[in-house]
Length: 111
Ligand code: FES
Image (cartoon, rainbow, N blue to C red; front, side, top):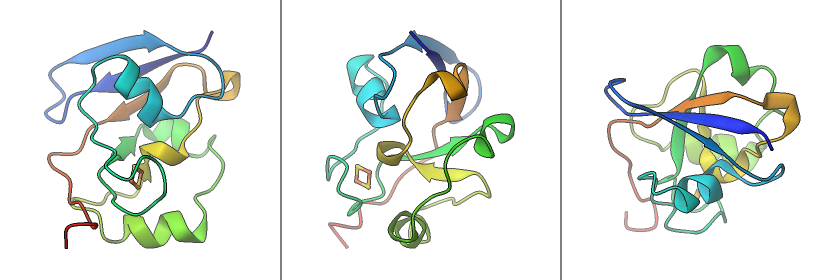
């Protein structure tokens, strides 16, 4: 089973978890009590699942879709390696994936 690591927004804590291959980062966060909201449950309508992917892994992930990129443009604290957690699937190809939580998120469904 692949592993991944969640890093807190301030970088002070890291949580390593294992998951089934093919699970989304959002699902894995919810299974392991990691505080990623995911209000729209993966329908790319909220951006509350925003995470910042470690540079070493960013290029190994499939590129974001146009819809994901559009939603990311509205996320708070956007970084060059930002992605929507609901759109990243953990597979053996990115075993050890590291993502950091942003300082805060914006729910575009409330705006
Ligand atoms: Fe809403 Fe990912 S859960 S965009």
